[in-house]
Length: 260
Image 1 (tube, rainbow, N blue to C red):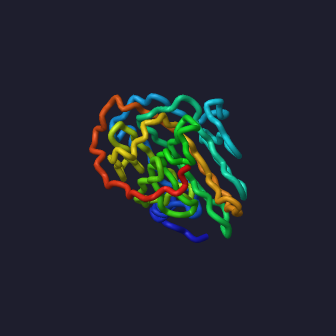
Image 2: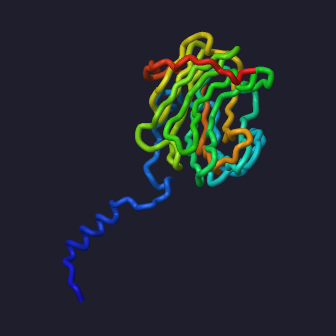
Image 3: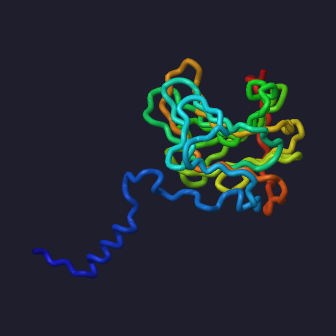
């Protein structure tokens, strides 16, 4: 029998413990922890929170394959069509919303879904084909960048694109996305850092808004299957001021041709 010194066995064992497992699931990799915009910018106490433990209740209007899974709101797509979950209620015309989010695409060879989180007008009459939405996470599955936007009537959009610092936005990596709507500005946050702030008055609709999660398909196309999960959703009022500066680059102003 081959004899190996005990100190070498101990060193090897430590190496095995420290070594990351090849092919480990994304959920086992490092993720954004308790640090997020809500506590980084001093927004607490939270006004409303959704942890998605147990069956999805009547607070949500859903379309397609939507449910809860292991404490996460989960949207699953097929090969065609949109999947969505919209929070019911009276909404808010101002405040702070934040989610802990991950997304994934399965397979390839077809058109990619857009994974979106947006504030949309509560009243159907205010929606105008998305012309007053505030999007705080919009990305194509498998693409390592997220778009943030404000749509304003009659046909204007304020947009910016951000790449992650660290792990990619999809491939089942956890990230936090937040948006803050005040009477004078809208700011976006990714993983507890402010990435853009819009102050032009035309960008501020002032209408009550609610949260919508969506897997958006391309009409008539065969899609790659996708999944989108939210570990939690939180809402804070503007009662407490931001404890840090929200100064950040302005989004770009473009024409929004989808307004109606």
